[in-house]
Length: 543
Image (cartoon, rainbow, N blue to C red; front, side, top):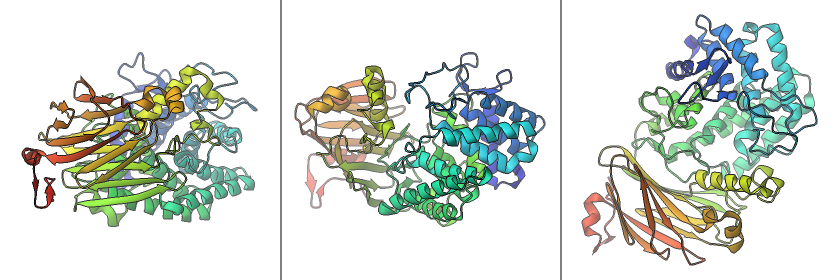
């Protein structure tokens, strides 16, 4: 397949992402060096393989030779250590120190087996005839190591983005290397992923602007490359359901997904690179996509732009019947969605033309049983595993959990036309609910979690971002540009710290059962906050 065979929007995405990646190519290393300074930037392994797919797809003068050089450099970074936890995995960057036999997930990334395995499978399916025979042989050997080196119980079905890729790769490798047992394992894993999805019609890794993109890539891989009619059928069913749920949460006017987010690396998809933004791009084009404007050089989470050719070549795009949902906001709506039963998690969202509120509720006696419930059978998220005995590792994990999990969010249109946002940062059980012009949040502080997580558990931090504008925070009201919030609860007085466009409002509640309630008013209604009309408190007008 070449550029000319792609749809217009796929050519647009692949072409722009390739032009961007070209500027980071290090000819000497044969790898991409993505950073603000080429001299000090890390030589990236995984994204170089994605660049190789784009080079074969583009097929301009010199692209084939550069792609082969890139793949040669990537293959040199694989661990060939049978019997070790590292076997079949890759260094994340060239020159990365060997992590040793007792490596933790913070010292190497086992998920490179799935990411690079699916990429190699696409390359061999699409471009084997363009590859030297010795390079094909090395790629085959690398995939064998990836599959053989993967522990049988690591890619659990609830870890949806990695499990989806692993299931598809098992069937592909089983067919290519005459291992029918691998095909059966892949189908069994895929069937269990499907069963769990159908249970609540969603993934437990819910509503993530980045990881839903990985899910869609993996489901397209099932459709286009898995050696299993079963996975192709189940994948198409899940893919359609995911897009229909996304369409409900997507706000075309604000160009963002409404929260809550199980995992998110940013709050405004117009300001950072989210995989979902590129998936929408494939359906509606660059102009209407939730993606940063013309990008050059280094930008927030920009390494994910390397996914562009991979998403384009697999035809990951918005279903035709949903296209209008991603170009025009149609109407005010309220959404309530049960995400899981054990633990019980319920997402709520309210969306109007210029504001949206998202929240997730978990039973307050759940302790750690949130999305990051850190189950003993899920070592990557397990606080009592040996990884957590190292206090530095424990601190790293706490920071990651509280940063990525967004159980309460607000987005709104600022007077200057940009998007303002607010999100809660807290590690622990949260019972939050969104409703029309209202956000209610309750928590439960537990001594054992406070001892383990420190301020990540005992504090409630509200991050506010209003580009180009200032905010005023008082105990009972927050005056934000274009928005005023009436505040009630038992959290006490906050500590407010500003850093550029971002403000952190931090509460250290004394009660073991803290709660805070926000009534939300637009600028025009703020002057009426002290009174109530015949229909109750002043609220955002329905447009």
